[in-house]
Image 1 (tube, rainbow, N blue to C red):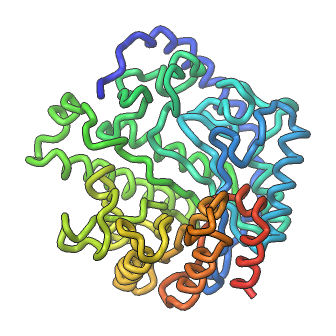
Image 2 (cartoon, rainbow, N blue to C red):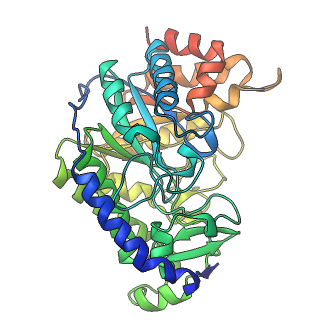
Amino acid sequence: MKKLTKKYAGFKLAAAAGLLVFALLLSGCVNKKAAMRRNVDKELRGVWVTTAWGLDYPAEPSVSAKELSRQADEILDGAKAYGFNAVFLQVRPCADAFYPSAIYPWSKYLTGQYGQAPDSDFDPLDYWVTEAHKRGLELHAWINPYQVTRSEGELEKLDKRSPALLHPDWVMEYGGKYYFDPALPEVRQMVIDGAVELVEHYEIDGIHMDDYFYPGTDVYDVDSYAAYGGDFADVGDWRRENTNLLVQGMDQALHEADPDIVFGISPTAIWANKTMHPEGSENTTGFSSYFNIYADSKKWVESGWVDYIAPQLYWPAGDAEHDFTSLLSWWSELVAGTDGDVKLYVGLAAHKVSDAEADSPWYGGKEIAEQMKACKENKYVKGTIHFRYRFVRDIPVLQQILQEAWK
């Protein structure tokens, strides 16, 4: 992994001028709506709506306000009909936005081109918030903190307002893709400011982050470590602290902006395996957030830096590497120590029911039904979030399982 060169610095002056104009425009078009504050005792019934690659929304990129509105209505109507009460909409799939932002340019996943706005001054996020609340649904803004591009060859196509082009020294390359360097205070502040911008301009019900932190264990961050890692003998501890600083900073800034906002993260299923860490989970040997992406989700919960944690428990009971039963028990014990201050929502794998063969535990939704039952019977589980909308829409047996579980 290497730092990005200064190759793109020439864009900086023009882009900065555009950024000022855009910020002025944004300040004049705020239209706040009433938030949906769910009763804390009410079960969360959430669904992820993915915008990257057109997986859920939009089906195809479009600048048409009419078409983008129509597709949003279709998803929100479906979510309501299937029994969900919360939608987690991916509003920043990369260093881009599904809303007018003073920090990030428009997403190519929305309109097909970096920096291209929808027509008619259409604000997709404002529409989603308004229409979700009309239907009695919460709307949580799901953001990706550090990813700049999701495929090779994309960097030169970014809009000139992209922070990655304005600040090439903030960017690292890894496996042909680009990421902001989590070690840099300026990067963490940008991510925090972007989240606060959302809270200040939209009556969203929460800020939700996924588990994209460090992209791997072999990142090349020698220069950053030399500049900022002096207090850490172990580079892994230093990287985890960088991620901790982001999470702690998000918690503080978001609740200063709105004391009632809900902030949570959806980490990968395994914090650490017991074979590698004495406090890790039994009967697991798979990919762990603590060691593989330097994300100490256990510390976030224990420190109260999140209002909820939503681990992605995407494997069946009895799985050799990621046993669902063991992981559910581990996360339950973790939140039990917070005396209710941090809620546990379980992320479930609706997508694994699709194309499951007859010998698979996922076939016919059997595993999902069992997992829903286990979550319902666990006093520490306060709800579930399902990945993702289109799979629920396209698999009638999933709709039946959810409605039966939520009777």
